[in-house]
Amino acid sequence: MMPIVFATIAESMVMQLPQLDLGVLIGAGALVVSAITFYISYTRESQSEQIKTSRDMWARIDVKFDKIRETAKTKGWDQSENAIKAVDVPADIVWPVVSEIDYFAYLILRGEIKDKVVLGYYKTPLSQYIISILKYYTYADERHFLYEDYRNFDKLITEWKIDRPDEEKT
Image (tube, rainbow, N blue to C red; front, side):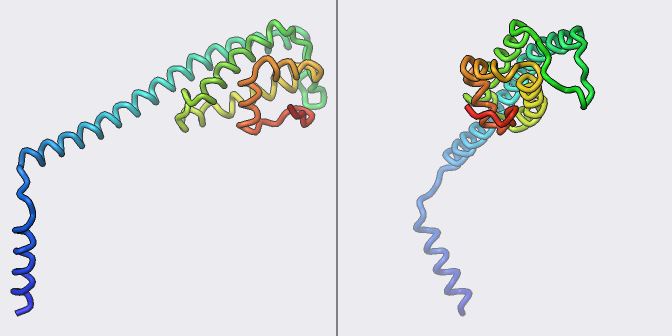
């Protein structure tokens, strides 16, 4: 007896629902599928663009950083652990690298490069370049100029918690 009562109540409830047109359901489904497809396509395109931009920036930074290394080698820089200290690399060689890093930092801080995979790939080597520039290629009395002139460079150091030489504070 109970199942018959339940079936009768369920049938009356269904009869009270408005009749939906099959075309409306198909249209709504198509809109949902279109939105999902657009989102997936946009996400992939965005990541692809971030990868391309990051690779271009990294190539420019790397080429300029190689000039610093070459200059340090020609000056007979001893890289053994006991002798590591700053080397006199001219500012006109160091500052272009910092300028490129500053622009890369701008793109990161502004959110133009925000994909976690992309950032994860570049964060460690970029941090190491920054540490090297500050510790070995820029004298302590000149570092404040880098921080003042290249604000995004400085902000990235703070945001990524990169250790400043001699525990400098800005």
